[in-house]
Image (cartoon, rainbow, N blue to C red; front, side, top):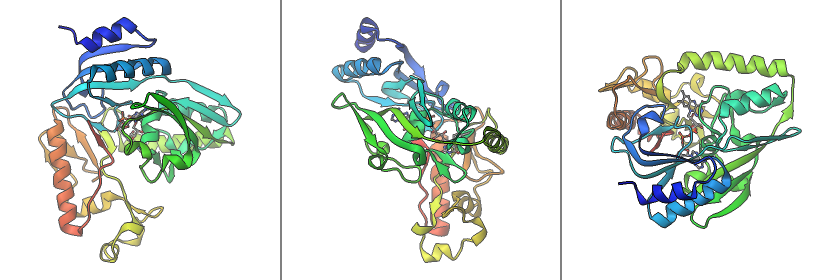
Amino acid sequence: MQSPLVVVLRAICPPGLSIVENAPLSRYTRFEVGGPAHILVDAGTESALLEILRAIRESGEPYTVMGGGTNLVASDQGYDGVVLRYTNPALEFAGSTVSVAAGAVLQELVDDVIARGLKGLETMTGIPGWVGGAVYGNAGAYGHSIHERISSVRLLDAESGLVREIDNSACEFAYRESIFKRRKNWIVLSATLELESADIDELRTTAAGILKIRNEKYPPTMRCAGSIFKNLLWSDLSDAVRARVPASVIREGKIPSAYFLEQAGAKGLARGGVRVADYHANLIYNQGNGTAHQVRELIADLKLRVRQQFGLDLEEEVQYV
Ligand SMILES: Cc1cc2nc3c(=O)[nH]c(=O)nc-3n(C[C@H](O)[C@H](O)[C@H](O)COP(=O)(O)OP(=O)(O)OC[C@H]3O[C@@H](n4cnc5c(N)ncnc54)[C@H](O)[C@@H]3O)c2cc1C
């Protein structure tokens, strides 16, 4: 029998609606682990998202939001509710300002701004996923994060159904952090970014150099979530730990968690079909037959090793469904 929520959604049929029942989350996440979501719903426009959320709330089904699924470990049991994706990819330029909807692929935004000779996102070349996910996790690389360019974010408060716009400071951005990690009922609708004019060839050269390095580190077909753990801020470390860190590994005020993981013997460790890369201690990947349970077991083992050896608690960058 069809779920009552699906019947309602098909009846209101807002634009861009797509519904998949019993959607295997392994197919929608880059790690390729995870069981079925009861329903996966895509909303293509803001009004569709509002209507869909209203129907979800009335149905009483739990829901969670995802984007490109590149930073997620989905449970082997799946998700007994609605997984909602806001797929609107709209981009609007006004001089060096761009407003981008949360469903835009981040790389397409990066390519587009570079092609217009706009500087500010080129170091994000090669970060997979969508803009909403990048805002949520304040994604970044090579010393820069998306928050440096964001002037405001429009969001939907799913509890009240109200749309609001908040400025950069209200987003409480920090290293791989934002208010959206704490306000799970806020859905990022779009962001406005301020960029600046620059030489297109220079931007292209920077982007191409970064992409080459990244493709070696993360082959495009690798089933993973990028870095599993956040790096550590030098300012957060105790004197005892600082004394054990060589100056050569400190970068932009951070110590890569890979440094501690490598000392703790992480490289090459495996649980079933899930393995730590031989060349990078902060990279866990699914060899093809891995499970979410194995990912979590391996993560727990790595955390324990680092805690025992350094007295440090590593924090996951990856998110769980
Ligand atoms: C090979 C590889 C390399 C990577 N390299 C980097 C890197 O260099 N730097 C970096 O920062 N990250 C990196 N990542 C991680 C990942 O790409 C980023 O975190 C990305 O921004 C996630 O976007 P997504 O759309 O895939 O989000 P998802 O994985 O779908 O979701 C991640 C989180 O964001 C939330 N979310 C998604 N969309 C919304 C929305 N519209 N509103 C509210 N919450 C939302 C979800 O609920 C979830 O908790 C890498 C990942 C891979 C696989």
